[in-house]
Image (cartoon, one colour):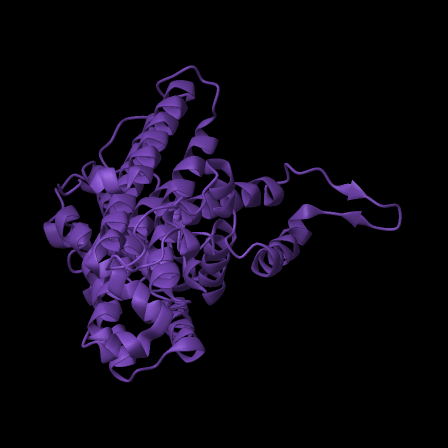
Length: 409
């Protein structure tokens, strides 16, 4: 009798139950709908953390399970944020412009409204006309499609060029980092069409929504939790079947998998594109909670941080990626937000705002050297994971297979 997916992967059900319980508790304790024990700003921090957990799951799929150390997945994360940010900024500006022009004696034409919107958005970079990439900015449905299509297409083209050339290892990591750097440098230019270094701002204001930020922050928290739950479920399904066995084989011995007749490049391209789309969805939920996005968010260092989160959490374990991202993100907020007390040493005062990155780097080195399973390895200790007791069980295909003797080895 074939067991169900959940029966074969009980950790998925446990994770989803914990995520639902966490979301419920935060909702009850929130200022928007609950007891007011958790501030709105911290609700946004938690919502953003869930988005970072989602991109960490994507990173674990591509690195922990497939063995491809991508240092460019934050580029897809940022592109997802830009795509939804274009609609948010356009629609919010349109409402402001329409309300302002409605007081004029002569009703404005549609072209005058568009020109006024362009002046409001691009005046900061000395322009007024909408670039071609803003062609669908007035349509929420189309921009939501672009959240997935633009990063997915970039990943598809880049992956096809890289994998068909059989670039692997550190060289592939350098290529992904170069892609991220090139994209960031392009977006820094004022003529990129995305306001250069100014980026897109005011994204926390949902156009046409009268609800307060207390409530809106909860909406995004729920959406982020739902996206993380679905993303985790999808990732677990991918790695649990034949596809997961093949990508693990690619990670462990790519040449052997190719010798067995599998199209290694196709599997790599599929997982690279899939994880890019997951990262983009995470970014589309993250930046409306952050309120702003600019090219600095796509800098290569962000993708390096992502790899550190997954390594600390334990790569090759989906729950490890979530644990690592959540732990480091919340700890970073505490250290860099001025909440961690300074440590006076007499001759020098340790200020965690300045020393946080050093601490993070040392933690990464320590985990790599002394705890390669990361924080996820603690789950093994907690559950007392061990090899099954096979004494007396068949250890071979025929009756002559040794049993007790081999089981003792």
